[in-house]
Each structure stands twice: as structure tokens, then as C-alpha cells.
Image 1: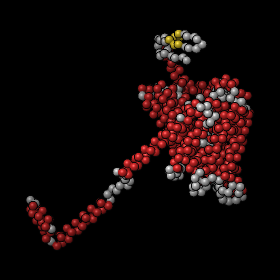
Image 2: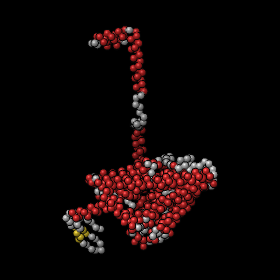
Image 3: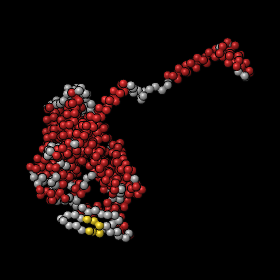
Length: 580
């Protein structure tokens, strides 16, 4: 009150001072002032309570603790770089010391297993299962995109009947055989496991996925240099599409209701109805994935064809190429389609049209960058598989092995693969010409070379239920076994079957591109029309021919070396042409 009165005395507004003095002197006014002061105090406390609180954004270690964490992170980063470098350097070392019969993926798994064993010696053996979303959104897309972007179209479409038959029909047969018999074994009590029908078919779908990474590491070795490209294309192409089909089947079985509680006829009717719905959803997802891949590929090609100014900016062309492919993958996953099948199809379309529309530096850089990212992703995946396998050997409440389950699954794996290969071969040989038939040697190699890899493991981690641990360790054991056993014995088997002889060198340059003359002529006409809007090799060739007719010829000397002959040849081109 004394402070209030002093303030009033210092005020020049005497009228306001008199009213304030009357308020202070009046007992009722004193109550009003006290209530206002109390309200102000409560409001101040409320503002302090609702003030922004540090929720962890700024809660970082400082001082000695921060320095210690920084030192530990630097050690981890250094260890990661060393391990990845050793894994990358494994391939040239195998070639240098003539150990090409050992698949590179086996070496990568061994390096990862040894790394985890060393970490366990220092007490850093905490179990950690990598988030499967990291696999599907960071590791797998670059591998599948690179496969589609670098595939030789003549060999791929020349053997498309066998590739599509193995990828679609073969995968469906393999998944059905494994899922049905595994569910029957568990129901009969041979495998002491309470496994539902939906989980059994999901497990069969993920095990029907062959690994393109492991197959590429085997077939690209020096041992397969003289192998017929048509056989190699069938094996690798089937594994590329097979992964996307297996994931689509996995999602289909996960969404379908195969769990029937009522016995008897109702149980079988519900199971049959669920299987029919699963097949319908599989067809829908496959068609949607193909449509989205073609749509994104053609849209990107149209942009690069019509906007000529992009050729002055190779960096932007690179960004457009990879962003379009990754956006295609993400949109497909959002739409409940197969992102892998979409990005593989998008890569095929981009390699046919888009890569001829961009500048020469962007074209070369896109190929090299795609292969680099794909190689790093492959190395990281197999390193992690090796580390996880070593960690699973320790006592753990979640990760433990069931020997009977592993043996039964391995038997079903080989039996289902044999049934699928035989059935698809009958259809292909019955419908195609004699030169397109798959002989028994090719079928044996196609059956044995089915290596399982990272995608089955990533799918197994997502299986719900209390049996998740057994299914994960079973998948991990099958992945490691097939990588070492099948991958290591594939080159000797191919040599034993006579598929690596010298006479196959002549067939490596021939592809079955023209399966039907009428269909090929129709495709040429369609491709010529599409090239007007989306560019491509035909559009570039047509543009060069038109330019030659409009501009005066410019002669350039080109030296051709070979067989001790040197000749000067004049070409009517704008720029020098170098002929090897």
C-alpha cells in the first residue's frame, strides 16, 4: 500500500490519483485490489507450469560424458568402414588367389560372423534384430532397381516365357507345397509347433523367394564366363521377379483369413474360400504393380524427352532418374502393391527410353552409381546376416533353433522347387519351339541354384505370433545353408553337367529375342510410335538420320586396329566416331 500511495503521489494526473486514492481508502476497494493481486499471482504460476519443457531435444550429454560418447561413436564408425572395406575387397582377392569357386556372398557372411564373434569377446553381444523396414526401404530397392536398369533386354524378353513361368507359377506352386505340408506336419504332431494355416502359408511364401544377390555373386564369377547367357538370364531373371512375387504372396496370405475355427466341412470351405481370395488378390497386386512401374517409367521418360534443357544439368538428370524410381517404390507400397515388382518394371522402362534421353555424362553416371549403391547394399545385407547368425548361437530367450523344424523345411524346400521346375518346364517345352526348350541339364541347374537370401529373413522377422523366434532362426539357418552349400556347389555342378564347355561361347552372343515374328513386328511398330513421345534409342537414331540429311557432312578420321590393319575411314557425323 505504501508503494501504491507513493506511485499515486508521483502521478501528474490528479483526477486519476484521487479516484485511485478513494479506491485504496475504501475497505471494499481494498478487497478488490487484494483479489486482483491474487489472480495475478495464480496466473503467473499457471504460465510457469505451461511453459515449454525440454522433452529430450536438448537433453544431450555435455563435458566428459559427451566426449566419451563421441569417442565410442568414432570407434564404431571406424569398425564399420573396415569391415565393409574387407568385404568389398574379398572379390578381387578371390580372383587373385584363384578361389573363384567360393561365392562372394559366403565370404561376406563369414566376415559378418567373425565380426560379431569379436564383439562378443568384448562384451558387446546384445541381441538386436534389424528393423525390417530398413531392409525394404533402404537396402532392397537399389538392388532390384539396378537389376532392372542394367538387364539386357534381348536376353530377358527372349527368355520371358521361362522367366515368367518360374517367377509367377513356380513361386505359387512352391509356396503352396511348403505351406500345406508344413501345416500338415504341425497338425499331425511331427513338428511340435502350434502353427496356424495363415502363418504356414506366409512362411512358405517367404521361403519360395530365391536370392538374386547370391545368384549374381555366383553366376558373375569367372567360372561362369563361358556359360550360355540364355540359361544365366533365366536363372537370374527368375530370381529378380521371384522376390517381388514372393513378397506379394506373403502380403496376400497375411491379409487373408486362413484361420478356421469350425471343424469338418466348414473348415475346408473357409480354407478354400480364403485361398481363392488370396489368388485373386495376388493377381490384382501383380497387375497394379506392373501398371505403376510402367506409368512412372513412361512419365519420367516423357519429361526427359520433352524438356531439352535438362541435358545441360546432368546432376538434375541423375536426381530425376533415382527419385522417380524410389517414388515409384514408395507409392506402390502405399497402395498395397509390390514395390519391388514396380521398381523392377520401372527400371526396365527407364533403361529402354529414359537413359537415351539424358546427356552422356548422366547416362554413364547413372549406371555406375546404381551399381555402386547396389553393391554396398548387398555387402551390408550379408554382413548383417552373418552377425545375426553368430548372435543367435548364444543363449537367448527369443532366438533358438528347432532341429526337426529345420530338417523338415529343408526337405520341403527342395521337393517344392523340383515340382515347380518340372511343371513349368512341361508347359514351356509344350508351347514353345524346339530351340526354346529347357533341357534336363538346364533344369537341374535351375533347381539346385535356388539360393535363399536376405529377403526371406526380412520377411520372417515380420511374422506375428508366439512362434516368431523359431521361424526366424529356421529361415536364418536355411539362408546360411543354401548360401554355402548351393552357392558353393553350383559351379562344380554346372561343369559336371557340361554347361561350361567351350562350345557354349558361340551361344552367348545369340539371344532368343524373336520368339514370334508377328509379335516382334507388332512390338517394333508400337515402340516406334511410343518413341515419338517418350524418346529412347529409336528416337535418337531417327533424329541422327534426319540431322544427316539437313547438315553438310563433316569427315573425321577413325583408326581401326586389329589383324595388323590400319585404315582411315570417313564418317558423315557431327562428332568423331571411335570404333573399337
